[in-house]
Image 1: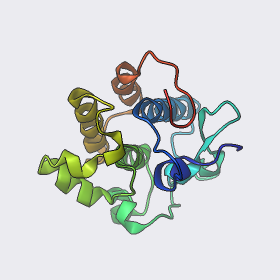
Image 2: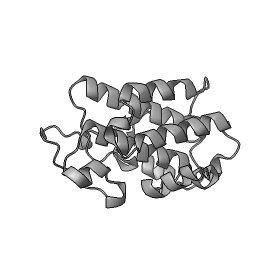
Image 3: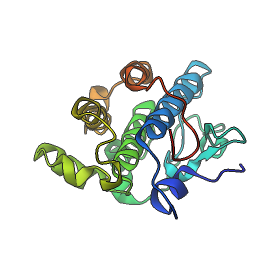
Image 4: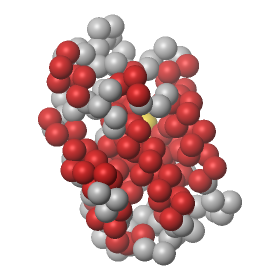
Length: 191
């Protein structure tokens, strides 16, 4: 893809950090992509992370097909840093649709923080209500407390230890859609 990965724009930017409306657009598009995959019987996505999100010619975020588990009926494939691995995979050695939701939660943290924070550390910050340590300092003044709280709340739900307590993809789309700004989002940084 011509416009690099989400990881490059979040973690390795050179001139200006990605603005809040673009970050919200990215997570909504990804939630919609996961909802589409689920509706087509492809609910398992291997190792969802910022390096698997690409930007097309029109600067729209796209989910890389390299993560689709096309040939895995049993969900026995996962390869990521253990700190980011869904807990149920550590217990059972299997990926489930809920494992993908967990990975989406780690991606929400990346988008919110501009860093790759291990979920256990992020959950500690959330429990301590230390949102300033969780939020990218480059985003100061770009979003309301309600918007930030909603994204943190959704990430926390996605990272729930018990898979059955995580939201489904439809409810993630429904939570993210109202946060979208009615402004033109230019890639990758300005609005």
